[in-house]
Length: 165
Length: 165
DNA sequence: ACGGTTTATGATAAATTTGTCCGAAAATTG
DNA sequence: CAATTTTCGGACAAATTTATCATAAACCGT
Image 1 (cartoon, rainbow over the protein chains, first blue to last red):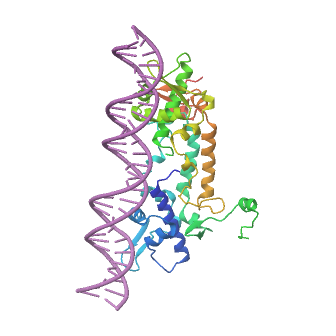
Image 2 (image 1 turned 30 degrees about the vertical axis):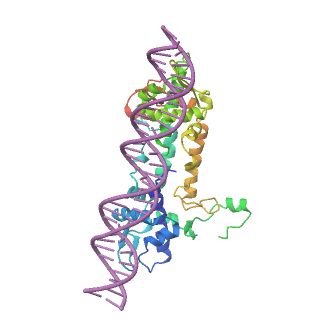
Image 3 (image 1 turned 180 degrees about the vertical axis):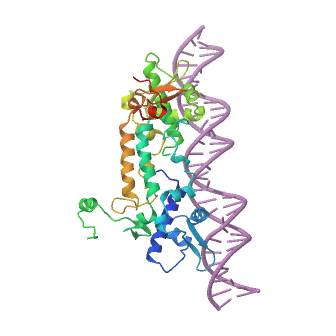
């Protein structure tokens, strides 16, 4: 919707890695291939993306047997924005929503104010939400992380208990 | 940031046309070339986009001298969503923000709830805001529509009066 | 040292989006 | 009817994004 495929895959992989790290504290490296297969991401493409993430020092990598990739910092210290910045240009985040080249507070496009509220919230999220926030209470399901049905609304609609007491 | 170039150009052109229509009620058609030049949109590209818009009956067109394009409905009846739907696929509007194929209320991705608020607002805007809303009080400046500095915050910062009483 | 494993890199290909061109069709004017 | 003007349609080209591959480099266990 808003991020590039590459950024989506990057976030997916980082999430996977963070959660795996939490449940396997003894093992250092996870292999790119495993992440790609678990989340059905094209392996070669993900391998490229992983290189970017390593260059930006969000991941560390080790070649050879027992090698692979691992988070370079703790999940609390990795924000969505960090991941996007490593993979996308991020210029598009400040781009005018209808593409006016001179859309500024002094000469705002007709949608400027309406959109600014949305933009502010997007920025808030990508700047504040960390991997730690996202993996908290989430669980693997078919190789992907699924958030808990926190608000109960859905379970009521489904007529089922969420199983999380 | 979120729309394709084509969608951005489409909105720009529709805005231009709506405002022009308001100030030149006597003239029926405006030429694609004029819009393209005024807003510095690649003409041939805009011409293609205009074709889509006419196919979706947002525009009517007439060939030959004194021909051109015109809004097919009144600006009150044309929403942002209508324009986007004519040129983009709009599937991306419902796409999971991190690209999970099965991101539903039952199996939400970790960002699902945070993002849902944003999505709701985006939908609200594109479904409710019409061309009439956008051209209201906006004025042409260098061929593009500029919104009034409604809230005064900016003019205070600039140390100038907005000139709008 | 060697063979197998895994990431790193650069080249390339496919797909999509963006942008351009040209000839036709249709309408207006004279 | 002829000339001009404009949209229409298909084809094409360029740029970007997405995806794949082959080979090199690093590492490990034996």
